[in-house]
Length: 365
Length: 71
Image (cartoon, rainbow over all chains, first blue to last red; front, top):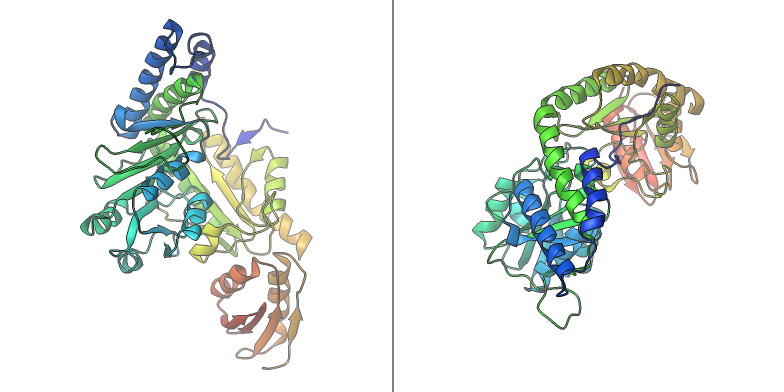
């Protein structure tokens, strides 16, 4: 048995962030909203974390806010954008489920279809946007299949009608620039190997926004997030972006190697845009296999991978992303390469793909 | 309709698709079969299977799929 290689989006904390986190628990324990010296020091720490996060995400420090739950950032910033105006939400069918839930609850909202590679259909988007649209919300890149969305074009279509754009940075955080037309943005520190429990959102200077929950004062954030975690998230983003700058090309070609290895097996479909994608993600689906068995077979060989198939883990419904793309939803394997991955790891993984698929097929067929 | 009905009711993915693939050779090219499958994934996987293996999905409603053998 080889030691485990995690080819999964769930990755441990960046080692740099871990050091910062331990130091910050000594220095940043106080509530920055109070008036003590400790609180003043905590405020300084928050300011430096925000400055660093803002630089990494391409926004101004005073435009950036934090929430103590990563998955809450897109919901909070989008709900606040919608609360400040009338009108429906236009979004796409491959967004995270929280955004789709907001669309389902807002009258007149539309979810725009995507093409077979998961890219937003710009023609359908043009048809969906009109004077009754309140906000357009789109991901920068898809977290399951890696396809990068045409944000500049989509944002321009919205801007022409005076519609503000929310960009859910997702796996694009720290590597995809916000388009000029952005008004709201959100990200989760987990996507850059930061700690869990840090959501980041941004509201562009001058953009309308209203705190969407009951409150007695004019506020833009809940304010009770953990300062050590925020500092660790900032340190992780800086370190992770450096890794990505050095390594994105290498990961891109390792993913290409996996795509080719998977595509060479009969009745396997590699999903997502082959070129215009984030560097480290690849997804494929094998006919006549169940995702759970594939994940288990790879785990036995020392590789942790994910799956978007139903009957895998906790999901009864298959991935809505694969469904929207018209891709095969069963036998799905989702691979996410960490910067630490070696070409030997991927050579071995690629050699395992044909036998793993055929073993699962033999058992089922 | 040419008579072959595959009842995959109650079976989970990918079993309905496996039955479909195994039994489509029982009908001649150009003929159709009916697949009954109520697994939620079948809604997406029957069309994807037809596309990948070059057959045609004639209709799908109420967990009933009509598939024509094309190759």
